[in-house]
Image (cartoon, rainbow, N blue to C red):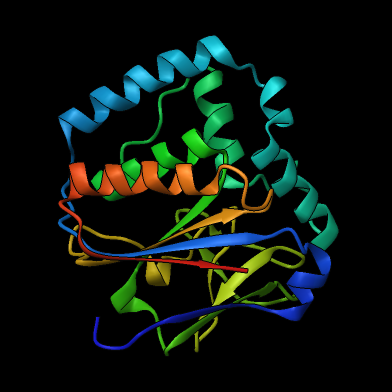
Length: 224
């Protein structure tokens, strides 16, 4: 990563949801198509999770509840456009297995369910410019969600690089998505519920990255 990427929160997002805190993990990684050991971990976690929660009770989890409230404050209906963390949790609680994509995406999904926070996973080398700014989506703003086609991001929190939007809590953008060739990862944990429990959740994700993606040269930045 030859140039340092800065991450900022816009005034409009701060005013809409001042509790927001973010944690960005930069790392050099080795992705793989599938990790049997990771999926064993995911299946064990899923079994415990299903014993502990229901599709009704997860709405009361502070991280999920805060993200839903932030959507409403920014102008989006969280039941029509679910944040990814809630969608993943609801999926496994309905007895449907998680999607198997690749090791980096799979472990980020596990960290998202564990924490309740939506996590943006990006190929750092595909991000344009030297800064990301978290703002609120505008009417008609072009955005291609991964596997979703054009996504209406009006009223949705969105990270923008020099070209445009790359990440929302509902879906990241096709342009900067992780692939098997990804070497430089940027993972952003979005804590709309604030700092409480954030460090523990980030440590859990960092542990997964080291164990299953050989993460090195890690840099962790908290921002607000």
